[in-house]
Image: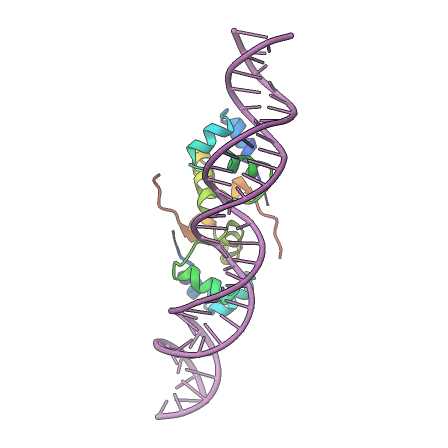
Length: 66
Length: 66
DNA sequence: CTAAAATGTAAAATGCACTTTACATTTATA
DNA sequence: TATAAATGTAAAGTGCATTTTACATTTTAG
């Protein structure tokens, strides 16, 4: 699953470290999410979307299908 | 984290087994989610919300705050 | 150009989402 | 009221989200 975290983070002009602290995870987690290593948990997805002031559906790209 | 799965499932008049099959998980997973045993993954949250025709934010209740 | 800041990689450890199987209890219906 | 359908409990196993630590590379700024 893809996401627009890097895109929104740059719009907000903050570093990975700052975003990590803002949503209370490690920098590694932000790096892994931005680089598609794995998906966020539902809770983290919510904290990220809330931080950016958008919906989870706007921040994450769910490909439809089975 | 709480959710409105049972509520929406009943509105749709389907059983746990039918919902489980619709979103491609086991019945155990639906039971565990409805009874608050654990949270859904982001992907499953999306499939459930999509099935009910609502947003993830409408289906799950995120209490604010760290 | 050089130092500092930002980003990335790697790998081991932990916790939790989800599965599987089997059985028990509750609710609906003939 | 007896049976089936629906819901629930339990417990062990798997995979992945997240942490931690340490170091390497890239980008930015003086």
